[in-house]
Length: 228
Image (cartoon, rainbow, N blue to C red; front, side):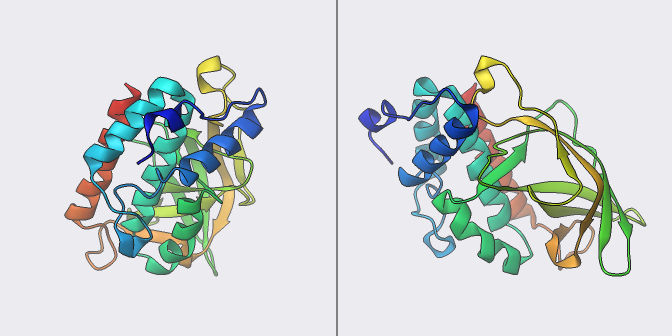
């Protein structure tokens, strides 16, 4: 975990696009994306308490950068927990290194509405509003989103910023969101393949275990407490 003087040198830029990429690179370089992640997953180990202390210190120096850390580290945890190991193992090194952004849906008082997934011959077609998401960086991002398949099956799917059919609004203009690249996302006839399904909730052999779900919730809680 970096020392306090390093946090005082968090990079700043007037252009929100450049600012977000600078923050993401800095967070990864200082080891925050790998903190409290097991070494076998590409992390550096450590505890959630250490991650929380680092996030609180970062939030004091650069609140926007702390939102980027929340999204990046939570996306990493979601992929680390995923049943689809091929996708997770492919993406985790880039996410930990900060070479790709991990976006997350902003917390709200109600559960996110799953995207409607309609079966096609060689994949699925997604439709629906996702709401606000943070860390939609210019360098490219991925996002874990809930979906509902025909027949009522619930799943988590992986979306990419370059997916045809993923629409985003302009970034939020408020000063508090500068650099966080926070915007509204919507899926409009977005095509995705079976191998982009991370977990299927009602299939025990293809879903999240209670232990892994609890771990994702714990990481989210620790990072959001720092933002509060």
